[in-house]
Amino acid sequence: MDFLYFDGKFLGIAWSFWKVLGWTGNAIFFSRFIIQWLATERHRKVVVPLAFWYCSLLGSLCLLIYFIHQRDSVGIGAYIFTWIPYSRNLHFAMKERQAGVTTPSKTET
Image (cartoon, rainbow, N blue to C red; front, side, top):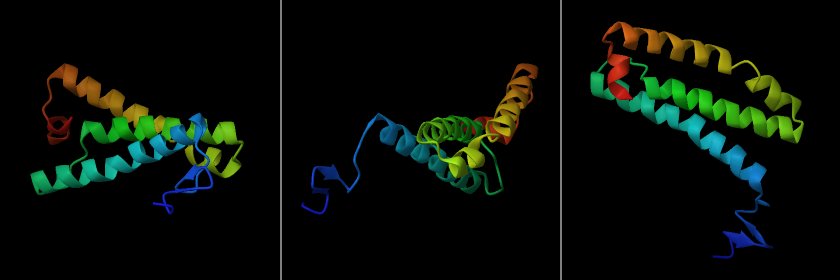
């Protein structure tokens, strides 16, 4: 078990609130891959479920906050504008839902 916890660090990482936020953002952002894959397999065609856009938005915002705190210009540059298309797609999905339009992407929330 020394390989998991060594020198006061779990997995070699000095954990803090900010590390937890960054890793949580990574996990949420990565989960959209699984969501997309499962939805596509279920429908046997390419489907973008609503949960994909929520995970994209939440994960990218967590990562952006983390990179701002770290003052990491590469990370900030990667995530500074990603919330715009994610929010816009969620807006369109909500409008469709209010209008009663049924699409395969709504079945996977």
